[in-house]
Image 1 (cartoon, rainbow, N blue to C red):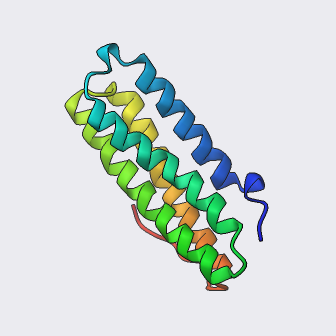
Image 2 (cartoon, rainbow, N blue to C red; image 1 turned 120 degrees about the horizontal axis):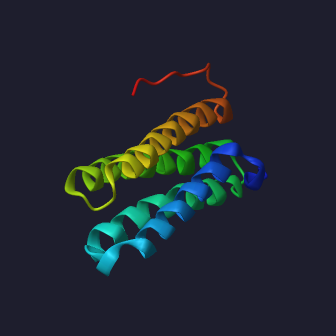
Length: 125
């Protein structure tokens, strides 16, 4: 088992989820509830899956939960780009959050490789 609270990727994913929660609360009229709901589910899924996987007994189980977190980070990245284009979130803030989601995804890929004892994997964009 791992101390997930000490993982930088968990800390950063928690911070991003909290930032987006604040962004949703600050949105005038909470314009598109379904879009915000999907963004928040994807954002909260990243740290939640890191935490759940870290409590599993085998490295392979942890790696599976990291794979789910990777998928959620990719989903979040895409949703934030859509939010920027549609005006749901101011473009500069949405793109900054999307870049953070992309970085989290790359960090998770690296962590998953280390957990499985694989050589360092570098992913493009």
